Image 1 (cartoon, rainbow, N blue to C red):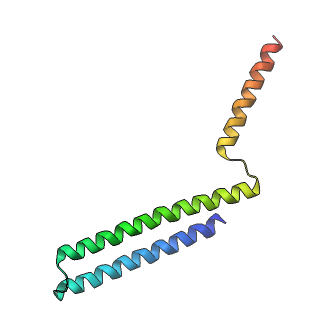
Image 2 (image 1 turned 180 degrees about the vertical axis):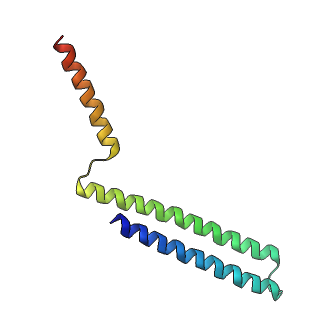
Image 3 (image 1 turned 90 degrees about the horizontal axis):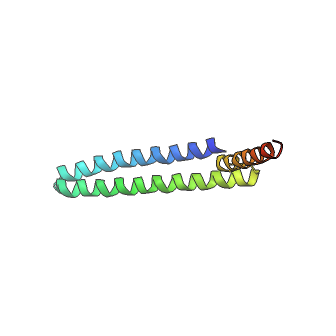
Length: 101
């Protein structure tokens, strides 16, 4: 399932890159035709890039949430849960060892 999520993320990222390239080309044309100043074009491209980065962070968060949901539904122990169990087991072993001394 994570492979499917990864592919979806990469597809979205690819679309964003193509969109940015298309936007840059269009902005360059508009600057050449005196429809925009270079400063305005840079600002528009910066805003587009910021929105793309924001979306990427949002997608990453959604992917993590989905992964955690699947792990929970399957009943798979997390790394943190296993570490907690290991600590508890060590405490029990130490207690048992001290009792038998």
